[in-house]
Length: 320
Length: 92
Image 1 (cartoon, rainbow over the protein chains, first blue to last red):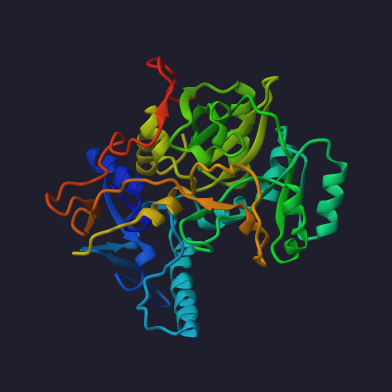
Image 2: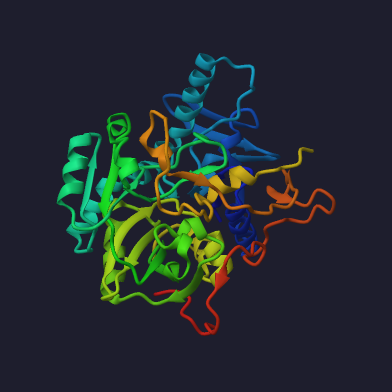
């Protein structure tokens, strides 16, 4: 039996669950906390004209790369460096560590959930919206730009409110704060010239009946209805009321299911967390997919068997 | 062993935030970054004290050594609509 490698961070509750599930199934598995790399683990490759092998030494476990069957890839940002490194030293160390880890993408025939290169491409929201549209999903009217005039024109031509989204979550731009979808108010528009520095995503606001999070694991799709409109704080962005909105496992329409599976195949993903708005006239509108989206809080709330499916997929090493 | 107090990191892991009286609206900002207008505080969340056990490769209770997150009922964060005992568990 091959070993399942979980690449993550020390604090990752979902990884704890997956590890426990893998062990309960008798699978061999090792956790490698790359977030704490390189100070708390070791990575080695040996190469010659006739041989290659590699080893990861993490915690008290040494793992020969040849023994790895599947990899669950959750983190790629090594930050395990001593604080005394200067800015330039730290940037160099981070780059060296990142490139050493990146070699894993090519040195073995591993089954990845997800492959880092595919995940990076699939993480682009404009690319997601384009592919979603090509596959027949409804998508919001969208402008992605760092041109303030393009935003102003979009606002003037829109018959609905326009919302702003970032491409990503800022890392500690303001400690303890997260970036949420927000309505482009007059006050925000007054600052629109700032968008020159950070391209943004601007979309016409879509009327909601409720929202759906569909989590794909291999060929299985786990969906939950999110009753976001029942809670004022979660009406625009349910993550604002994550603890207060209600979740309910549902079956999604067959055509949406098929499009989701086509979408993940198109991007070469085997895992993804899709977000949809369901309109008052029952249309599913694609918002985005997070190729490494967290699921634990949803599984805890609904009993959806995502951890179990992940363990099954990692042990099998292939999509059914 | 080091005790983990990971409130903010936990928020980052989930990519979530909190309820706010200004939900969905933009506040004043003098920042050079447009997105800062749309930042808001994360929800308060109680995370138990924990340490990383390198043998188990999991977070454990520092007093008992028992894993903190060992099954999917260990983190009750959200509500479930009532009366859904036979809801579908997945679309095959």
